[in-house]
Length: 189
Image (cartoon, rainbow, N blue to C red; front, side, top):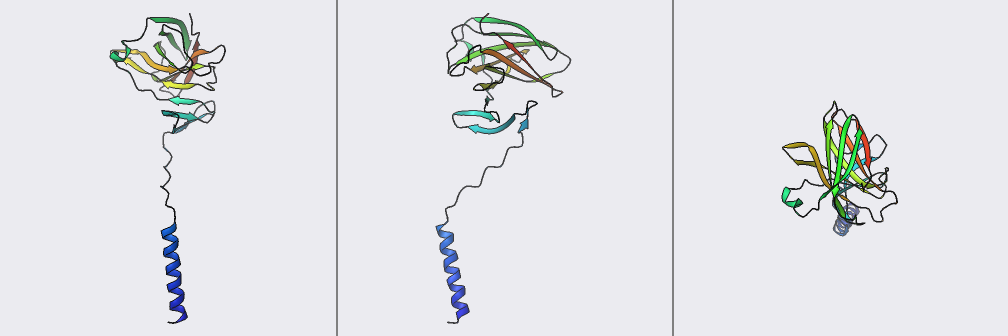
């Protein structure tokens, strides 16, 4: 056998051995195209937080949940509503309520918000309990509670554990012009 043939044969055997011995890893998942940067510089990506399936982690460490809407049957076991008051944000008038009962750190709180007024259309509403910067809180995306009542938004908001002193209910409203506005409500009224 010529030295060239021997070299080619040795190269082929080594290449095959390297290929067989390679650990094959799955291809990385491509980045999702609906990631975006908030006005405050936080980045909302659609990477799941393994601790909270269906949630997303912002660049500042806050966790965000795109909670699904709930049927009326889901609300049958809720307590009587506690009115949390009224506020304004971005030209909208807001009225909030939560279900009665003590808020339990690590639990959730059913929240309702009624939005009226404004010169733009509301396209997204998010709630969180805690501090204004949402650090340590999970943001929950609200949905229209009942289609016949398009001003009534609802979701279940996770109560952070531990719950920061002076925690409030925070509401972020995004309109169809890309404007975002924030309001807060005391949790006990």
